[in-house]
Image (cartoon, rainbow, N blue to C red; front, side):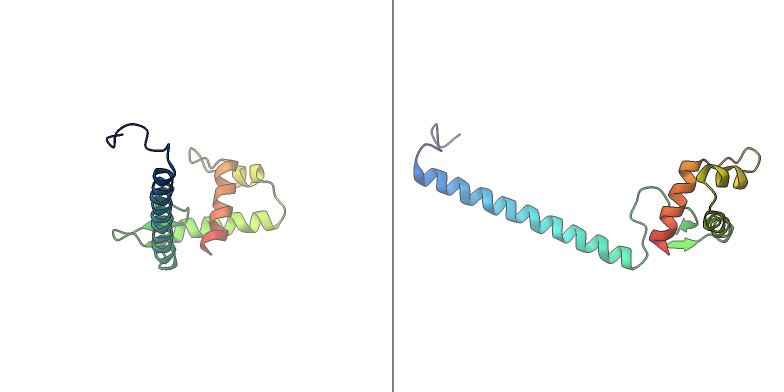
Length: 118
């Protein structure tokens, strides 16, 4: 706008802004590629990248995921119950102890995470 009014009315201005927009889009796509590459590299190293902590793991100070033995045993029990054909709600009732309730939604997330981190 500081170039003196409507800068898109002639062909040269339109070409210039099209080129500038193309370079901006290219730089954005390169930025996304670099971020994806870093995340993939960190994931391969077993690093925790944020979000909910996968059940069965603890996060160390430097961002590594290490198995939690107690939670891993519970996961194995959940998987064996699921392999026997039990529903998520039946599994939830079976593994919930006292005030430590585990919902069927959490059971489903545990099973999905188990497949992702196995």
